[in-house]
Image 1 (tube, rainbow, N blue to C red):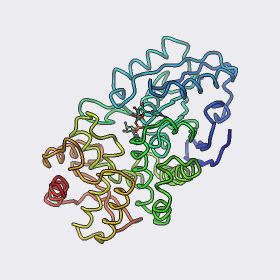
Image 2 (tube, rainbow, N blue to C red):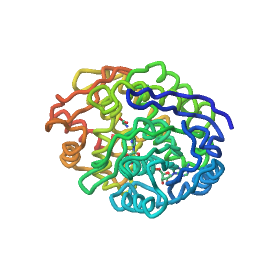
Image 3 (tube, helix red, strand yellow):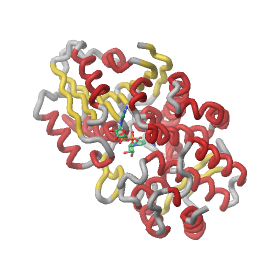
Length: 373
Ligand code: NAD
Ligand code: GLY
């Protein structure tokens, strides 16, 4: 076991640490900032992750002196972030030995992390939970910062809470089994941190991005640690997203609308939607006279070199209704008082939130991205 990086998330109410390394999964208790002895512990995982990762955590927890350890694997994928799965998870804990000292361990990607976090935030009026993310996307984004939630027929992440984990354990070895498509999807969230306000990280990614995507453990750990440091800093400043945290939604207003327009049917995974959304946010910034075209071209070239989609016409089968996509944006949580909030850019490493995007500019960017280019 080796811890390569430790990042602290400093919040006014509750601080915690992100542990990044290799072989950490087998002794998860070591990273929890209180004793697990005599507690009833729960491991929520999904069927793609249960063997070997969920079981490794389960076995590791049995050695902590806990009163009981239970494990539940639900089907993998976005469909599981639902009200019925939420009910299943809460009932599973209530039917067993849950009490206020219980701890829920989330072993999986963002779906398991968001669902477990939501369940932990409400069962017995809130119990501790630990994030053990096994996708790159979850390691660099969803496991940190305390946003939890489920999807509703009306939209993605429509019901949820802020509930910070007691610890986050990122084990690079879990990524060995992660399909390449999900590695690339995670990369779309990594590059976000560079584009927001860290041009030197963008330069590092240009040199090392391929190594990250080839799962080189050192490069991966460094990228994860840099991303987590940035997220910790932003969440530390604005835990509940009243201002600065909005910047983390670069590419997401577009991305969530594209995901919704595909009906979550597998044509797009979240990170792919964010990659197209990031390219669109830069194109929109150019159109609005905010960003130099060469910067947008630079970003798009890097995303393409890595193997991520950058245009709507790369979705197969593609989408053809710009107005429908714009309709989904109005319902997104990032709309405020009826105005849609976009993260725009004045160049690489210089992004900001804006609510003054004109409909005709938006529609033109979407239509252009739908045409075979
Ligand atoms: P996911 O949890 O669906 O995982 C992607 C796929 O990989 C699933 O099929 C899963 O079973 C499988 N998988 C996970 N780990 C694996 C491993 N090590 N080996 C093999 N297969 C593995 O999706 P995701 O991309 O991790 O997360 C997307 C979700 O995260 C979305 O619901 C999104 O809304 C949410 N999200 C939340 C936040 C937040 O701040 N809470 C931030 C970003 C994204
Ligand atoms: N993924 C965006 C946030 O955590 O705020």
